[in-house]
Length: 538
Image (cartoon, rainbow, N blue to C red; front, side, top):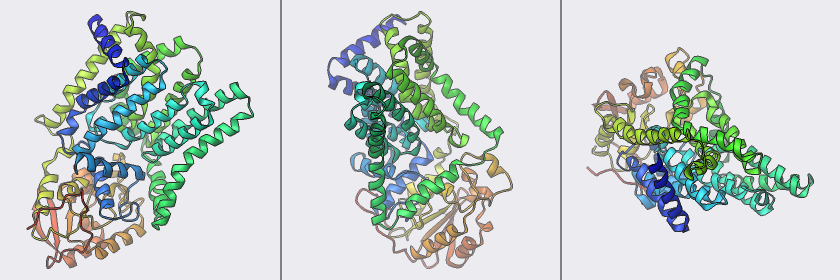
């Protein structure tokens, strides 16, 4: 442990001497720990849905009217922008995330700390530990990874009492939180910690009369990005769609009535391993809180940790990528004790926790590639069926100028086919066309398969398919992809009859059925825009 401590201390001192050295270190560590995302096409199925949504925007379609999901709009804006820099692929999006987003988040931790060396240590710990868990979630370009970047800089603006009393800083912090909110809504829980810190700081410095103005400035800053976003969608005639899909429908999804047994099962499968993987940080956080006293920083960071708990527990699904929100406040909480350990000022037992941290970081660095490249198939995203179906579609004689609808939860088919969507419903897990609810296996296994279906959504689907002249309909139910075998096409008369009248079965790829419009009449949908790859011609 002495060698490790000396080595880390040397790196931190070297990097903290110049700002560009710290940033270069963050970029290097980010790329080193995220290399797997540059060689695996699809790490997580959600990513394929995000990039397909970005392609639909590039084709001139409007989010939430022509492509629907429960994710906020800036996620798709980022995916679209990242492709202009990294290329039209998921590895390209992840490369931009590793080069820009994560190092800037780590640099935000430096801005939070008044001591640059401690800030560099915090940024380094953030990058290492946030990659040391399940790569399927932590290495993917999830909305949580993107939202914490502006939110971290919002925290930096109120990191001290003097900063938290400044109205312009509070307004800027609110705006950054509003931007983060437009990546993923869970970050709003941090707003309570920021508001409390601002209220206490202002009451101490300028009296209670200053508190309403401070909180009002913070709230106005937060509201500004939201109002501008709503105004833009209103100008496109899609304001109601924005509210429905990202708020109303999202709340219904979050209120998913998961059984207590499954909630416990998911907590044991995901929350418990996360706690074990981050145990050195939790231990260091406890040591820091017990040694720093009741300072502004202590209350702010402790408040952030407490406010992150409900964000992670929403719906009791405990998806590992939900835990990304913990890493920033957890690192900030831990860094005082980590700094003391690095300077040989802490208890000897800290060496045991340091060794634990090394084992976790190295262990996941080895395990994650094995999960994707090993002889076993752990993740459905690695199923070659997706790419085989996409290749079959893109090489079909009617591919050019065509459109595609996939019956099932299979956005990777759209990703590999590179064909425009024939319906707004690409992410069928959120479509309310069936009773499918992500993260609720009891619902899928039970008898209430049609519970929660919205009849109006079926009207929208059939209108979309006819208006966009769907060329291909792919049925994944026979293959049982993501348990879609529970929702066979035959159980849904509108789609079943539409396929029977207008389509013919042209191929079966690993039990996935490919139907093509009779007569091979290509759909007249919009052509791909620059940056969106077209399928190969006949």
